[in-house]
Amino acid sequence: MNWEYWPSSFFYLPNLPYAFYLATKAKHPAFFSVANPSIKSSGNGTESKFETLNLIPTEYKPKTILHKSTDGILDTLKQLVEEKIEYPLIAKPDIGFRGLLVKKIENESELKSYIQKYNINIIIQEYINYKNECGIFYHRHPNEEKGAITSITLKKFLNITGNGSSTLLTLILKNQRASLYLDVLKNKAHLNLNRVLDKDEELVLSVIGNHSKGTQFINGNHLITKQLEATFDDLSKSIKGWFYGRIDLKYNDFSEVENGENFKILEINGIISEPTHIYDAQNSTYFKALKSIRNHWKYLYNISMINHQQNKIPYKSSREFINEIVELRTYTKKVKSYSDL
Image 1: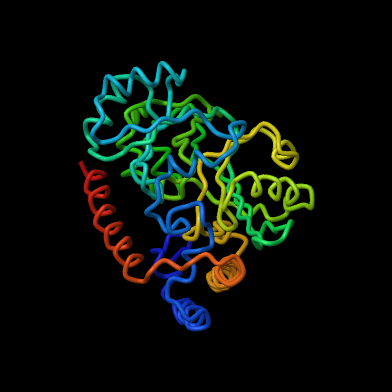
Image 2: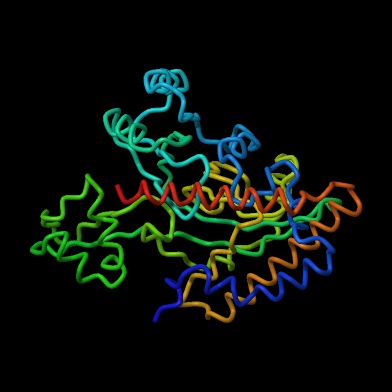
């Protein structure tokens, strides 16, 4: 009954009439393809995360390499040494979303197994050991100096507190949130479900900041300030051709993020970005979530119109855009089949 866990279709199908209205108004069904000119199809999910990461200023970018499906494992391991990427590290599909196959890798043996198991292009990224993670949604009109932050999502990793007598499995089963992710947690090799946690001992069950991995999304919009927006104005201008989307980042203290210091960007998301604060069911409602999605589509429309009409950026053809989506569906099925192995 908790709408936070409903399928994504429940949030988008009710909004389709508004999407058709915007497309009719723009006189093109793929009008949104020009919102972020530097990203393939403005970030419709088919773009390479590795290529998008390379748009980020070096100071904010984690050390990252790309293992292509045609690369040899030994060459990739050599590149890790050259880039000084140490274990633990993060491995994830170069094209992917919603946490599919994102994994923290503890050693070389695990990495070899991951690469051999998944015959796709893989991003290998240093593990950023900052305490906190959040998603910040930003948009800016291309011909204006200042933009706006419309969503901040604080992420609380799934954790368990011991009582000195119960096994980890028992504690998970008794925890309302953790029990929903038992199937995911059973596949984590580093978790000993028979272990008895000491009294008041806290154990983080997942360090992947994705809803599908158990991370709780918390509305952090109270943290939006003029200083934070000014920081993201500067960041947006340093990422050529990015005007709309969500940046996921890790940090220790939010005041440092506000001042543009000491944080790392995990990835940039484009037009399929969500203002993920809407999934804070304790501070919102299903209908407010639907409205927030429509509001962000309106921002997307305005940015796209400026890029097309004033900056003369051509729309992607409808046929080409549809072909990309069909290819993405085929690829996603492949990735999901891997997740069942």
